[in-house]
Length: 136
Image 1 (cartoon, rainbow, N blue to C red):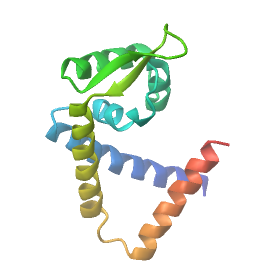
Image 2: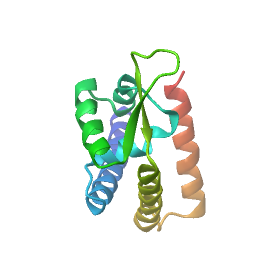
Image 3: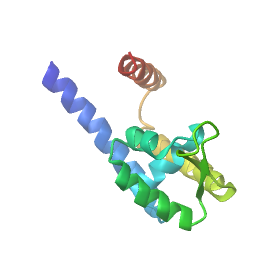
Image 4: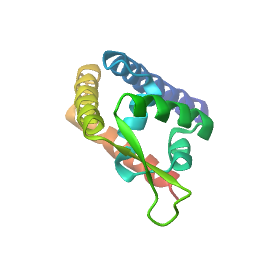
């Protein structure tokens, strides 16, 4: 049972990673840069962004630097703690994020289009349950 669940989770992760990688290439980004753009709705600090992405803060700094040079995001000082920088999308970054999200939805529809309405509803419920279980 545990091995079956682990295998299923690994398969879904692999499928999502392949979709993200393909979309990233379409927009001349890396998969992690694409994830950064999609994670910036909360104005995270570099440390918070590293936690979201599951990587080291020094890796995030380099990725943020490259996206900043492309004019897709900016750093702003935290209102409560000036030592902390918040990462925010620029207008160009917001536009690109929406294009990425639209393209991801199209790719998911293509890749998982054979699923029935019930199976898609189950996937949404399962994702919500896993997400809420992880935040406990």
